[in-house]
Image (cartoon, rainbow, N blue to C red; front, side, top):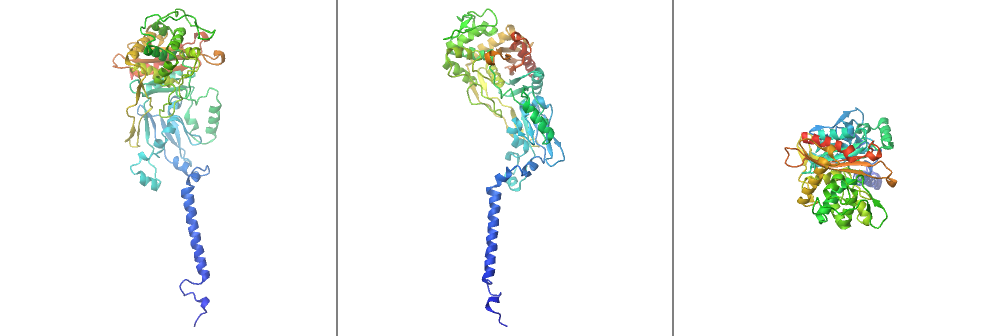
Length: 498
């Protein structure tokens, strides 16, 4: 039987209605593929960053992070919570190492080494995988690697104990390399309190951020202070380099008191004997009048150049997290220059910067770039990266550095820094008391910068800077020699015994 033409479904292509339905299905399939491509390729970052998408967080915390090591031993760990975000970060001696590790929080992110080395610690760094392209296709993640620091465990502990119960910071470096040996900020906090994402972490976050003592501020690298008389190391070096002073024991023609140029303001000293004092005596007893006048005689251009050679006013170093820039005013008049040259007015420095100043004296005038990470490794211990030679710049010529070592040694042997003396070791130092606040009304900061060389050492092994913000002496008795030097001595002794 012959079917009507419009009912014959055996003909190729079928009826127009069937063809239209097929074309519509193809169009829907193309639209579906286009939309999938748009979602997965074009808008993938948007969905990845959406707070409602927890897949990335679940994957991130599905395995333990790698560890941060001090002296070959971990100061971090992981706790299995058996929850959706499975592993939380733990810390050994958390408050002592917090200025180095920072925190790794499921709720508040990462800071300091936990942040700058996150790729290694979390296992996302392509260098951790032997087949990174294949892992990229499959979504596999390598186990977290480890980050070995340059810290000296004994020095870190000595610095933390020295500042316990006080407010301030310590930075210690190895002069010949720039390796950071200690980095302490007080008061501190336990980063483990922030590791989770529950109510306890939220309460700790609110409490720490509301604390007027700012325990999460890394005072060693993120806070700048007027360095006070410790900056006289820079001023003395500038005067010797410029030829303003050629004989350490010759009179400097410095009045006491000294009238600041162009003003009716007189600068005085804490003690007597500073009138016309030699550079040696003025450095030993920290005569403000002598160094203020020397700064004026050196001149703003040469003082700026000297400060920059030591690391002021330059690009802030990364260790690997950023360090706040230290500054020396480049546009000051003579009166302001006089105050800047004794570490006041607008002169500002981090403790790490002042440790670098002391290290430059100890290392023949060379300023080494400081660093905190010795190497990174895979979970099995294979090295991924290692610290190579660090760049150095010459802040002063070696002869000037030798004379500065002589001056700093005098301070510790018989001047204001005798509390830093270590039997059997050569120690050089410089005390400082920095005024601050409106009308200098704040409690003076007590400073001490120093370096030490053991009797069996060919070169100095450690340079230290200590600042104490809240010395509990009477205002007139606060001094770098009394409040900060003992802390520096403990850190130097710890390194020399290592």
